[in-house]
Image (cartoon, rainbow, N blue to C red; front, side, top):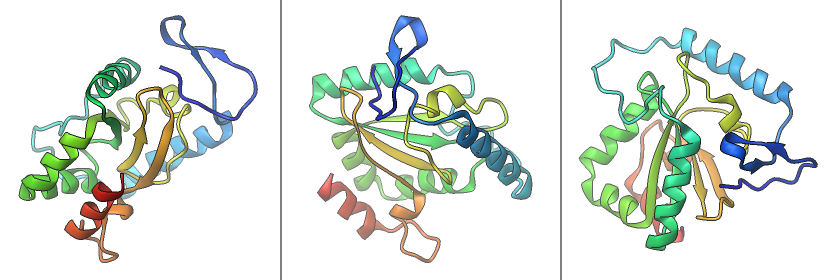
Length: 177
């Protein structure tokens, strides 16, 4: 797995793979602080016992590598989603897809979906330092099987401007990606 960047100087990655850091430590620190503050300012309701696919103990490097391999053999791209079961909009996106199984099926047909946990249990800072930064959760990245990031945006990209996920907006995304 090689996530491409435009910075100088490769660093040694997990299991001896070469990765290139995209961003300095300062923006990652700001992200960690903002996510920590966001988590305390907007306390999540009691857990429903479902991790919604966000496993704090999962290895995001291994998950992405497996997804890239599957995407390469199936002719799809990876749709990486950062979030957590504690995140209201992450849970809402899951709920929206459950209520719109045709859109969920189209996403699964076009993309290998991977969720990576972000939260107080594990910020996955090293992993996310290799991707274009994000300003909210959930954030989505479209990644080619070779690791090239083609698109990234926050959940707002799938909403109607009125704090609701929107079928038409998501269908447009599916039709253009």
